[in-house]
Amino acid sequence: MSTQTEANIGVVGLAVMGSNLARNLASREGNTVAVYNRTYARTEELMKEHGDLGFVASESIDDFVASLSTPRTAIIMVQAGKGTDAVISQLAERFEPGDIIVDGGNANFHDTIRRERELREQGINFVGTGISGGEEGALHGPSIMPGGSDEAWETLGPILRSIAAVAEGEPCVTHVGTDGAGHFVKMVHNGIEYADMQLIAEAYDLLRRVGGYSVEELVGIFREWNSGDLESYLIEITAEVLSQTDAETGRPLVDVIADQAGSKGTGVWTVQNAVGLGIPVSGIGEAVFARAVSSKPVQRAAVQKTVTSRPEPPTVTDTFADDVRAALYASKVVAYAQGFDLIVAGAKEYGWDIDLGALAKIWRAGCIIRARFLNRIVEAYANKPDLETLLVDPYFADAVAKGEDAWRRIVGVAAASGVPAPGFSSALAYFDSLASERLPAALIQGQRDFFGAHTYQRVDKDGTFHTLWSEDRSEVATEPSTH
Ligand code: 6PG
Image 1 (cartoon, rainbow, N blue to C red):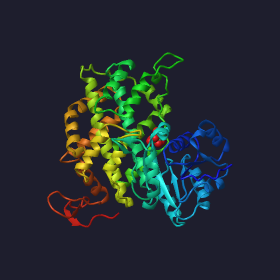
Image 2: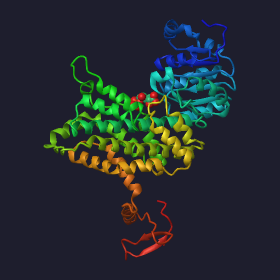
Image 3: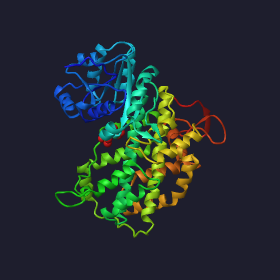
Image 4: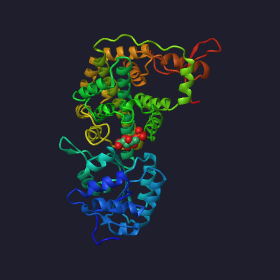
């Protein structure tokens, strides 16, 4: 069934995210929304529940395409993967040059670059778009990170601005850059999300296992933190999760949830790409690995059986909770600094002109990592767009310096207590590595030269050198090793 009304935007894929995005679009002045789902019953369900939103519903993909005004613009909201390619093919067969296909799923940006190139050959605009904020965000206002061409942005910009979350009066959407830039930054957003969640989990674990706080007391602590510079969606929902009592047992829900964390893969992609680009995202990496360790029940049980004793946590002072807060904040600065470093490296590698300040701006609301903290990042890049790292922005440098002693104490207490804090400790190690005048990498260069003649540079003169380790151990000037 299709009406004569023409829609300026269409949504393909009406699971919760797609339906909510369609409802958000339809609720905004100036939008008429066409909807299509492979299973028509889902479309009928949406029409039944929200038919008042004036959707133009089609049972067939042909009718759906026919219901779109030109340039036809359709947002694909299906689980990233093979389904995406199937829907793209269906639309591409029916779209004309100048039309726009948007992929709102968590696609791998490498796929997006390929798809954008293939469709551009047909004159069709392909826009990979990060959409963050989950189902609630899709309905009430997500943070939106579109890539794709300037031509597509001309049509898409006003539509996406009409549905995005708003921070400080500005819609949380920006044209991130060309081809896969949108999905790349969404991937990094998710990586930062992993790191942020891991750090909060470590703070919770230390407060509970070392500080001895009850779950009820922890709700109060996280709520208090959420009124200060740690204010964020993730801190807010942490208090909510901890405040939940399990109806069946009457125990805190967190105590009946299995302690094995899952992941859909965007955190892994972030680390894989960071390693390839030579960017140490240790905070994100430790978060990914911590989820993997938690999901190794056999190994964990074997070690628990073998380890005969565990350290007794030291008695902590009444500043412990505040020390944990300071360690959390400093480690969070490191995680975001590393995430933004990765975006800089990705932009250079893939030829994107990404405005870091504009990106921090659209992460202030709607997305999962939304936080007061991001206003400071906006200011940091406004003050110095080519900032070497967030750690040297005066505001963050001062905040980390103020928290440094507490951070060191907490990492020490965690180690002494046998409470794993890979996020806190790797962040501190990263900070100390950058802050150290000399690193043991010099010894590594010597080792590499010894066994592989991989050569080394010297601190006191230019050139490349090799020591004749298996001869008279004299040093020779040479060319950099290529093997
Ligand atoms: C968002 C979220 C979302 C994420 C899911 C699952 O920005 O709305 O980041 O895109 O994919 O929350 O994430 P994991 O299963 O990988 O933890």
